[in-house]
Image 1 (tube, rainbow, N blue to C red):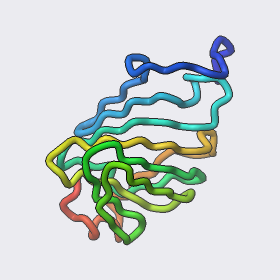
Image 2: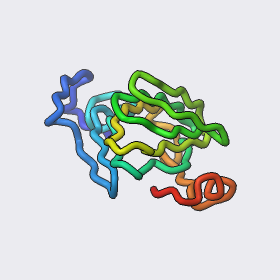
Image 3: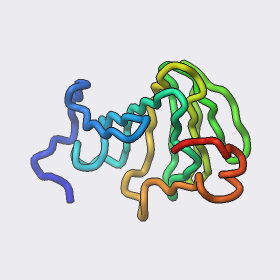
Image 4: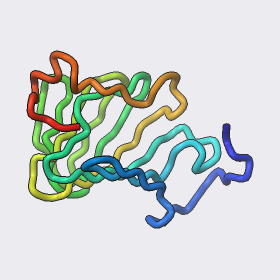
Length: 142
């Protein structure tokens, strides 16, 4: 349920981002439902430590754009992979399996925009433990 006191716009300095800390990664949420009124976007800055990843997953009913700020990623889209770095972006249509792996010795810092925020079902479905994904990168971490 949305908060009627929220504005339809919001200036969001870094100290007001909603921080989510997970093993090997930090998410800085800038826009999502409950932070601004009537949004249908998810906007997050993600930071992955060396050797960590957002392993194979997909977003049912949602499209996504990834944009690398710094570091390098081994970016998988289905069975294709490419090393991407600062200034590179990836567009992912709804439901396509992908994974982002930090293969460098620096923090991987990237932005993700996901839409629509209000699609039914979970935002993310993790697939790293399922075939064929677990065989593509058997040494990967979540």
